[in-house]
Image 1 (tube, rainbow, N blue to C red):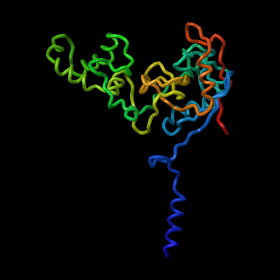
Image 2: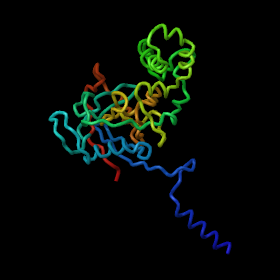
Image 3: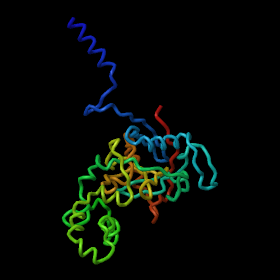
Image 4: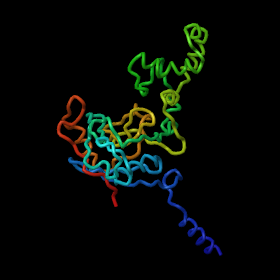
Amino acid sequence: MKKYFILIVILMVSSLPAFGGGGMLKIERPEFIIKTSMGSIHVQLFQDETPKTVKNFIELAEGEKEFTDPETNKTVKRPFYDGLIFHRVIKDFMLQGGCPLGTGTSGPGYQFEDEINADALGLDKAMALENGKPNQLLGIRSQQQFQQVVMMPIYMKLGIKNQADLDAKKEEVIKTMNSTSLKNAFENMGYRYQDKFPSHFLKKGILAMANSGPNTNGSQFFINLIDTPWLNGKHTAFGKVIKGMDVVDKIGAVAVNTGSKPVKPVTIISIRSVK
């Protein structure tokens, strides 16, 4: 009887889905090869964490999704990335591609939302102010920007419309300012976060969506040459390099012009699934 019970347990366990560390279901990681004129880069895509972003990337790469050709303004369907260039390369920072015009100004003719979990990145715990100064991760470069990004939303929240209101609510302003997290500050900029899926930090080798602000994703992406913590919460990390980081580094060291565009074009030959 005891042996029979053990056999039943073994059969039950063997029929369960695979689990990874921490008791979570094993995560799917589709692999793709970004073949470039300087070598191949193998990436894993975070399909379960960023399903919309990965789906968009795969369908564009393999010619399964319609997009608007910016040169003809016509709807077409072909492998989107084939023949495009890395139009922006900044040494010790990142390399960026996915612009049909090769200028960083175009995309597929549509935009879609970010897929970022701010809490998973700790942005709900980090404060916008550290020791009375703007947190470096805010990326604030001027007093005017600080006023726009941090202070104006606080004034609006507290109903402050003039100097008299500010004088009357000075303590309340200070209290609110000191309790504003990075997540709050980014939300004030227009970012909207989800808590359904985890998110990855923007570290070296991470593949992320390039954008022009909240929810403006399209086709452009970048690969980190270094860790970029100041970009956490602003860009969807949807994959990572698993082979060919030497190629990434090699591209990151090419000669560029004043606009950070490689003097000698670095071409994306194709982006295809590892079958």
